[in-house]
Picture 1 (cartoon, rainbow, N blue to C red):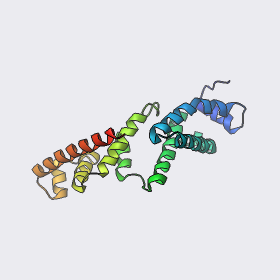
Picture 2 (cartoon, rainbow, N blue to C red):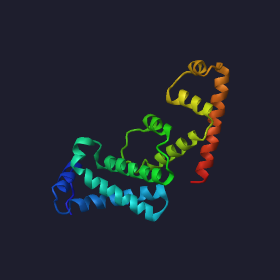
Picture 3 (cartoon, rainbow, N blue to C red):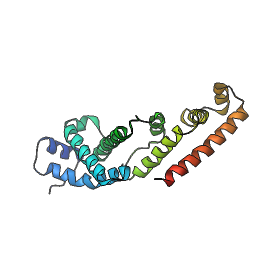
Picture 4 (cartoon, rainbow, N blue to C red):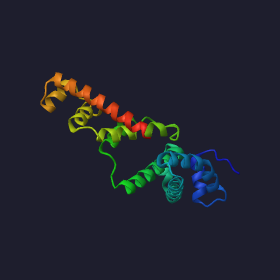
Length: 189
């Protein structure tokens, strides 16, 4: 089997229909894609469906690879699979992406060297996102203002119409409640 020196060379050979190119790509990513899907859905049949859908989307998207992604095939495949998994959960639950999720990802999503190594971090972020949505509105608001929008306690007090002391208490209670909700969700994972 030919070993490619670059992701671009492999993708070009796949696009041009070179024998063995897609097989190498598939063998390189199958285990990572399947394991990630299984960790997310905890069901073999659904994990297989997600894996298949991920590879089909990749196959359809190879022509645009060079233009769209400079992070390499690992990041590209992870992005595709992450979207397939999100679609799966949207279909299962009927819910769209959590409102905090995008802000959380922007703030805490560091550059990815190997996306499959960071899958655990993603799972934790998803639990925190779900937990944030379970908090009372005032708790969510104080956490959003303080940690997502980097507002000072004084600014938050002005926005919420409260004293700085009241905001400190509210923030403390919000963090405590979030910690407890996250612990409970992690017990059930």
